[in-house]
Image 1: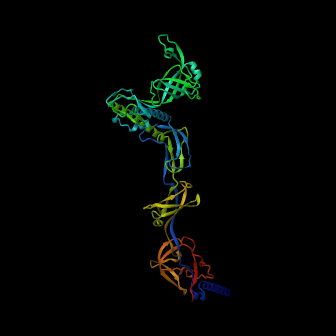
Image 2 (image 1 turned 90 degrees about the vertical axis):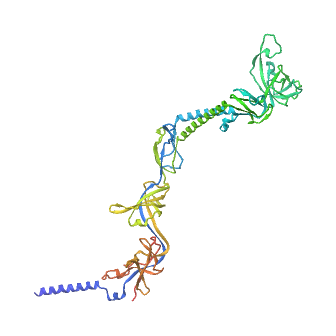
Image 3 (image 1 turned 90 degrees about the horizontal axis):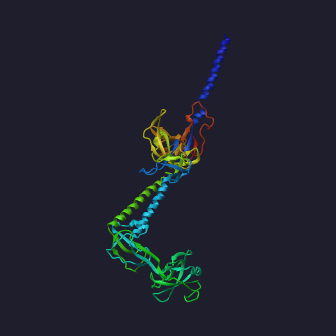
Length: 574
């Protein structure tokens, strides 16, 4: 009986002791009741703050072009080509217009060469008819007829035509001669040839005037020509005999008296002979005649026509290109029109063939990188066939998604900083091109598509995963407080300011930009004030704070871009 009573009493005593100590641990000491709560604080500082949205997505080229076998819009040209040479491979960087592939079409080059020869002949033929250079036929007016012009500088010889005279095709109109020099062809018998074959000087004595003209031997044919002796002797009435003669060409300066067909007696001599009466002069047996002038060009009419104008008189001096006579007539106009039309047709055919030659080269459509190319030398390809593609990495695009909260911060035109894990340490500039106005449900979360343009480089490749930081706003040299110091009271943003006497005061503030660490204060606070970021009053009433380690220690506060924050601890005084 007593044992049971003692056991109950011992149990009650134990419960009482445990309860007492539990009560003591839950209730603060009287000393703590009078000391008040401890505060964690931070100074209101000036700094910079930026707000943005982070997202990610794959990179894609914003533009690209095809490597295509060229084709003609009018359907001209061969339907197929042969690949002759390939100059690039996949991954090569190329410039717009760079030669990528050369093709071959064997028939085109042969056609071009044939047409070029035909065009040259047609121009020369027309130019010869009108007395122009081949390059000048384009300015010819068929209605004006033909104007025959002097082919060289010289004197007009043999011009007898009058205005209104009829000309036949092939008829010689006149000759233009340079009469400052004349030409004589002399004959030498074999004995004379052996003596004179190394001579260089000639003396010419004319029957029509006194004196001797000195000339030079320009040529001596070393192959004898058989001629009837009658043509080389003064006798007649005898049976003609044949003998060999050698032809010598002599040129002399014309004092103004020498004319074609004049008879001349010729002596030849070595270079050291100075006068015609010296013993070293060999006077040739056969007399000769002046054949003509050294420079002589005939003006011939290549059409049947009527002379409409004569510009010069016989023996007038003219310059190359000076008009001599003009011809007209329906035949002339029709002839000129036909030949001009033929020239135009040939040129048109050549232009088409030249344009087809351009189709033999496949060039890069843009600056970029060869994504793929399917071209091997010897392969036959068709007009318009796709051989590969080129993409541009200088301007790329990034498709990403943001949630319905962040989309309000993303604006078209907002700057973007893009990083790629494959290119460490490098940041690429970008810009928001488009923000979707309607969200899409993605596994129960509303997402909005955002298109970002990226200024890339040759290091980037389509399909690379990129991270983007979309700048939603920034401010410099503004008042900042830690985000944990801000709370809402009666629907208004507020902070607690620690007073000098250790008490706190709730102050309403006007907020600006906010990120995950700091808030911009537009009004309500001053730089240097202490705002409460935490308090021991937030601890459970029964938890004893033996040290201040439970509260944040003071540190240095930096910018609102995540550079840390300075916080001070304060304690309410008695």
